[in-house]
Each structure stands twice: as structure tokens, then as C-alpha cells.
Amino acid sequence: MKIKLCPNCKSTSYIKSGIVNNRQRYKCKSCGYFFSVSKLGKKIDDYYVNKALQLYLEGLTFREIERILGISHVTIMNWVKKYNIKRPYNSDYHPTYKILNAKELGEYFQKSDNLTGAGVIVTELGDKFMLIKWERFRD
Image (cartoon, rainbow, N blue to C red; front, side):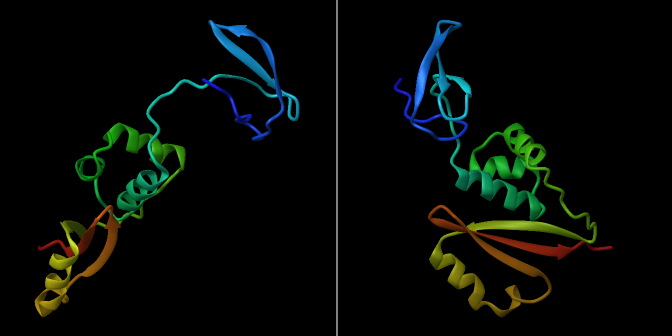
């Protein structure tokens, strides 16, 4: 694999600096950072990280987010820890969600009984839309 940039400062000036664990090691001339060839692995797009954290803040559980986005609930927990996300606690409401295409979303909002009694947020989810509705727990 060809190195193009220093992962620390994004400089293009670096030199070879030995071999560690059968991998070539490099040293950046600009910042002095030592690095190796990064292995090719799964990198999840930032869009899904942002969307997962947004859904978490909206009140969905880790497993619900896993089912929607197809990303492991453990990965989502790690992102919440990494970015120190705190969800506001409110036990009076619980979210329900639906995934709709544009036509279904338009039909949903044409019915007046869907617009009363709860807060609603619509967010893009790829080529579809996710509608999150908060309803008050019934006593």
C-alpha cells in the first residue's frame, strides 16, 4: 500500500524509518511523527456516525439503531463513549419511528390526526425518510 500523507499533520514529506512487525515504518519530516502503513479495514462513513448519534439523541436504543442502519450496537456504544454524548433524560415521552419513502411521507402528513398530540421530527435516511414521533406514556 502506498503512503500519501502523514496521518498526524497530513504532510507529504516523510522518510523510511525501519520495519516493525514486518511492516514498513515511516517518520514525518514536518512533525516527527512515526507511523506505519495503515491496514485496509472497514471504515464506516461519517454520515452513518452522525446519523447513529442523532438517532441516539432522539431516544432510540442501540439495538433499534442497529436494525435501522445495519451497524453493530457495540460500535454505536463505542461512538457514544468516544464523543461523550449524553442523552437528556425524560421519562414522560417515548419515541416511535417509521421509515417512509417520499410518497408515503406526503400521505402521512395529509392526515390531520397524525399532526396532533405529539412532537415529530423527519430526518433523511439514505433514499428514504425516518419519521420519529414522541408520544406521552399512558397512565
